[in-house]
Length: 199
Image 1 (cartoon, one colour):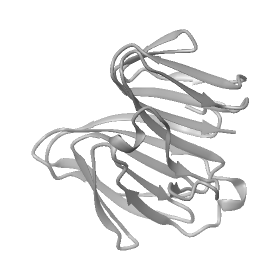
Image 2 (tube, rainbow, N blue to C red):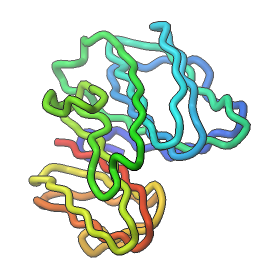
Image 3 (cartoon, rainbow, N blue to C red):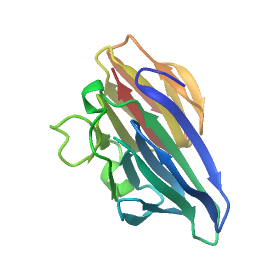
């Protein structure tokens, strides 16, 4: 909780044919990364969508939104749900929701920006925060760098195991990183990575 602009990083397991009934949020950027299965979203703006494993949905709660998240599948769904504090100037923004597929083949051995508050990340889902959510897949024995430039980061392998600047991290372990310029990740196994960079 509270690492840079990250409010919390939830690691959820949702049983088949169950989920979260309608409830409200405001002034929070909520990024959902589906690890296995799928999640179906409905909200008070009339949005409805199904997000599958490896894909991402974002909800900017803004001035207020009610939503439900259900696993309508016949198998368990697992996901990361990442809450990021919005920029101060975004507190009065209207709510919004979006989802996008991010094929793992497009991020093999390199980072893909999944969600971002930076205008130059044009292929990413938009959030109202000085933050980036990125993902990559790496094969065992491969090395991948991330230029952090002294900002905060939180890295979680969704699958596999890695060394992060020499520190071991297994699947679903969280690595909090600060005050360095470059993160170097050595894959000990085939791994799927999710990283959040914030101020």
